[in-house]
Length: 198
Image 1: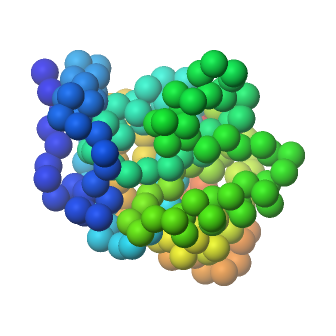
Image 2 (image 1 turned 90 degrees about the vertical axis):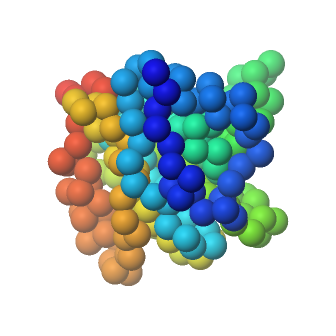
């Protein structure tokens, strides 16, 4: 069974380089595991996708399957420890950017430079910064969105109904604490694959 993907779910300028085989693979993985993708990526020049709740290593598999199935041009931020010698090239080929949490300013500078090279690019990240349950999320996604002039879009991982939901654009208020509270409260309605970590 193939996951259903609609042509208008991704604007043309966000279309990726993945050929028909990879798109089919993504649809097969999602469909065989019972997952679906609903919603549309907004027609903006740059979009920052924040995905949550991030509670399992399986989230990565779902994310790559969605990347292939939707055929999107996206750079995603991942913990630097997964970019191991010998396989780091593979994750970077998939669009991965290693995150060293001890030097967040250099990461933001790198992301800004990367985005400036391309018109029509999405950035993906998990705002929690960890698969473990955290009481407070980091504000890096707000700074990245501001410095790359990207619109923030919520992607929810809703495991009980096996749905990846692309939400609406969120416009930050400019008050970091208020914005983080809003985003955290928004995602409370969803349960990840390991719900106790949501």
